[in-house]
Length: 148
Image 1 (cartoon, rainbow, N blue to C red):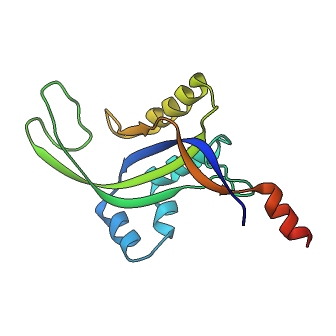
Image 2 (spheres, helix red, strand yellow; image 1 turned 90 degrees about the vertical axis):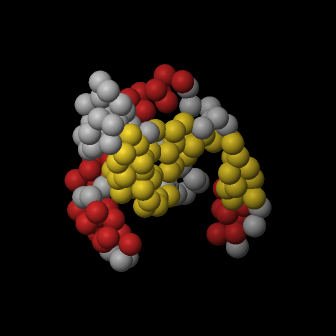
């Protein structure tokens, strides 16, 4: 197989989930992703963005993991969870996808804004990396293999 490196940027979103959703996911219930309103809205929003997760013949490619997010609420905040001065731990769904490094800055800002607009946190954690390379099989090579 012919491997080529594709210049991309990473988009990673930290999304709070209920303990029940995390428990279902840990038990292997992938339906929990669709039945949780918050995650479903995130997945729907991101699926409507053709710029995200394109790898040749595969579209909307993403990775996810469940974990925990910790924070202490400061004076002046209006938290969705927790209280001022309190250390809070939240179960979290971490969604990672990639987009082409050549995507213009304005489009990237619009993608991030769409996520911020639906995110339940006052200050969501959304990471956008600088350029990096990921492996991707050559489309020409794959087509040649299919023809033989």
